[in-house]
Structure formats: C-alpha cells, structure tokens
Image 1: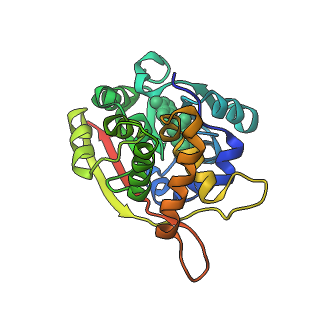
Image 2 (image 1 turned 30 degrees about the horizontal axis):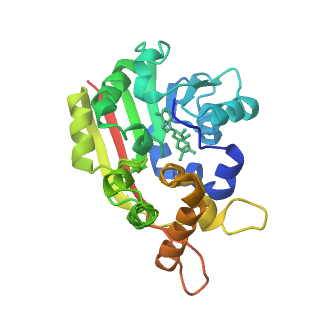
Image 3 (image 1 turned 60 degrees about the horizontal axis):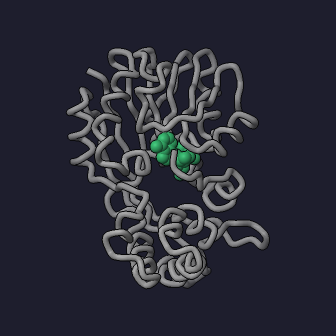
Length: 275
Ligand SMILES: C[S@@+](CC[C@H](N)C(=O)[O-])C[C@H]1O[C@@H](n2cnc3c(N)ncnc32)[C@H](O)[C@@H]1O
C-alpha cells in the first residue's frame, strides 16, 4: 500500500462537495431496497452510508485503500447492512467476498482516476469488477475525465520542475488518470460490459471557503489532493511547491465578483451492464 495521504477531517474541510455533487450518478445507480452493492474507493463512507439507507434490505460493502478513511467510516457509518474494508481496488481479485459474482451493482464515485493510475492494472480492474457482478449486474461510476483540473496538473508539474525535479519524474508524480469516454468505453467493452452510458461533463466546481483553523479553501484542496505531487519534491522544498501551485492557479480559478474559487472539474460518468 502507498503512503496514506487521506484524513476524514481534512476531506470534510476541503472536499465535502465530492460526495454531495452526485445526484446524476446516484440516479444511474437507482438503488433498490434489496440491492447488494460494492462501493469502490468509498473514502470516509458518507456516500456509502446514504446508498445503504436506500438498500435497506440489501447490503453495501465499501472498499478503500486508505486505512485512515476506513477506520473513520467504520466508526461513523458501519451498520449491519453497511460495512467497510481496507483494500486496494487495483487488486480486487485478492478480496474474495468482492469477486464472488454475487453483487447486483458495483459503484464508484471520484475514486477511479486514482485507482486506474497504473496502466498495468487498468484492464484487469474492469475484468475483476465484471467478475464481482451477477449476470446483468450494473457497474455505475463517476470519475475525473479528460481535462479534469488541467490547471492544477500543469501548475503542479511546473512547480516540481522549479524545485529541481526532472520533467519525467514531475509528470510521473501525478496521482491521476483522466481518460476519454472512448477509452473507458473500450475498457468496459473489453471486460465484458455493454456500455449503456458513457458521458463527459465540464462541471466547474466551487471550493469550500477558507475558514481560520480549518484545512479548507484552495490551499486545503491543493495540500490534500496534490499530496503525491508535493511529496515528489525534496523534503525542504515541499512547502514552496504547495505555495507555488496555489499562487499560480489562484487567479485562474477565482471569480472576481466575489472571490469564490471554482476548479475546472470534468466528470466522466458511465454505466456498464454485465453481458
Ligand atoms: C476523492 S476520494 C472519493 C471518496 C468517496 N468515493 C466520495 O465520493 O467521497 C478518492 C478515494 O479513492 C481512494 N483510492 C485511491 N486509490 C485507491 C485504490 N487503489 N484502491 C482503493 N481506493 C483507492 C482514496 O483512498 C480515496 O478514498
């Protein structure tokens, strides 16, 4: 497992909008009372718990690679029909209860651009999701798509270059993979899914306001979401890299009428049906 950059406190201060802006993907999931649903990259479990309320006679299992998130999800949201497990979803086949072909639906929100970062495990991830589902089961997800937070990716790469990190390493430090709908459709089809929906939406997203003593606002978002970029700098230069990313993107993302900050989120949503 890689270093755990996540914390429930920081996430709720800097990115509480992530599990909230989900009405469309949740409508595609169309949870039924008896559904058994896997939630991949469930984070601190806020959304998993909401889904479990709709699957009141079924069951929801949330998996996440962050031990800190899973601990907080277990403390806050675990119920008899909503459970959580610490697991790296690039290796879903090592989680026997996930890949047993017994799930009605597999769901994921805002996690697959991290899970799919390594090209070597990408196709296998989709094959394992297919294995998890019953015949006709649905895989429903939303993730960052092509062009997502491009301003951040460019600023973070440049900040690493300025800190003396070679270009190839600076590029490799990106923790994300933001694919096109064409690429995701191919991956789904190759893994045995009928692609019912695969869409891309530019959805500029308002950051939480800076609040004294809280790790929100632009800096909170950058320090949380760009942690792997920042950690790729030599230790003594990490604060300078975080500051530079904020300083470079601030004028690009600020609305001049009220100072609010809006990131260039591009969402990719898809529904695949197991053949
Ligand atoms: C932005 S959070 C989204 C959390 C949650 N789904 C939500 O909507 O709030 C991204 C999540 O992906 C998880 N993640 C990243 N790589 C992962 C992997 N290889 N396996 C499982 N979870 C992973 C992170 O730990 C984090 O919880």
